[in-house]
Image (cartoon, rainbow, N blue to C red; front, side, top):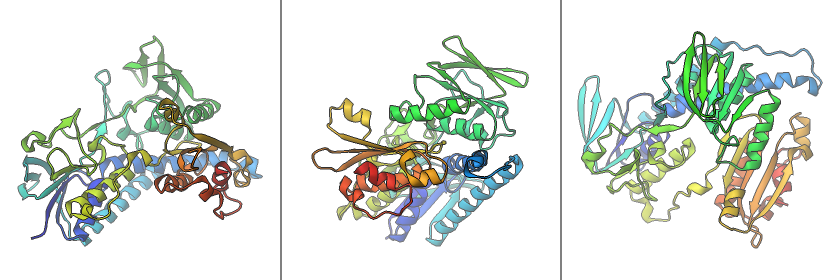
Length: 452
């Protein structure tokens, strides 16, 4: 008898687990209440990157004079942008759904909850469907966090999902939160021509990132006339006609046409019936081991719900690892997920990407490292493209030369970091990068220069 595998949540983790387990012979049922492909992915990540791509083209035209071109101007058609985003979302959702169906996955549109360790109830428009399960994956994702001092209205006071895109282009956007999502919004709307104020609760943007990386982004924001409120924590938002006023704990206030909350997310776990199945959670996140198992061995959690890195790439890999474990493949050669080796990117201008050990982290734990850094200003391709901002930084073990981590600030950082991600994951040495015959001229040459 085939393994009965029930998946609650059709985001990157759930869909990857479903298709992979089905190919391995499982009887898979996936229940999704919103959008196949994941609301966090298709309603947050994909639209934001589509908007950023449009902004990047607009920024490029503004720099065109330095490349020998004149009288280029790009004007934003907000409605056309909205239609483009919708088409991308619909296309991706359709493709993922078709893939699931082609693999024999049963897809149920509805809301599911655990009724017991081996029983799932899926509530649909046609009634409740009872599902017996040998294994269950919980991958219901997360939603934007709203503090008790804010009352989003979807018009002037926005959460992130209200802004992909908003109903109208803000003339002056006040962004609350200087993490990854917050700084992407700053870049995005500044590229569209909006004035932007960023509320930074600490003394640098991106407080969890390398200080040198954060400084490079701050410099670019200031160059683009972004107003920074450093060391200020928002404590209230007031609407005054067609304006909003964000009040901070240090007495300062920021006035704009719109305010945007970008202060993290909370897991979608409150209606999953965790108690009925005996699944333990902390602050709403299901606690998991290296196999993504909860304290109930046959019930797994992945994606944002697991409390690990909130990245679609991590969720997808978790889904694959769960499928392998459910189908017994972990008894063979099996590599556990190492979250510390996950590459991540921030799609600002310039782009930011990193992987592996960070410089500040190494110093904090007293680990000896070798740090090498090369600016893109010395790279021929960067000069040709007219964008020499940023740098490549590589961290390696001084004794063995093994690549431990790296950061990239500059054009194409999200693509270039893949080379360092492979090096970190495979324990390659800096000489392996140096001795690779790379294309010339190319931005990737900066990686070899930094490795050398």
